[in-house]
Image (cartoon, rainbow, N blue to C red):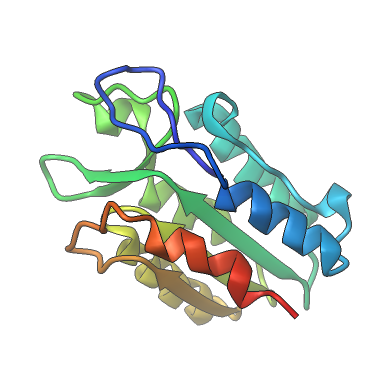
Length: 172
């Protein structure tokens, strides 16, 4: 999932040149991952509904021993209660709880998988909240790790340095 532009023009995006989310998708195909096993949601395709649907379908399609990779690059936010969210293309900036994708929602969907390898990657503010998702997945019998650009309590840099390195890390 890569959200570099947003429906609400008040939400700042990033330049699309040299998209690393697309590059990661292409790199996984080059490494032999069947295209049918991948879902790529970019910008306007990355709505709240489509993100939740894609994660749910991915969990439904995984079998024991499989590896599921969740990748998100975009904005992250917290609501007034401190709950973390991923900001989809169609989010309303003043209503993250009603229009963004809660980390708890991602955890709930991923929590249905058993006996898998789970790699959680995110480049956004508060992305470290995925560490708790990985911990819960391990407690449910999965092998899981979260590698993120920020701690759960911190904002991320605006340099996109994390996203720039992920596809390179998979280079042969």
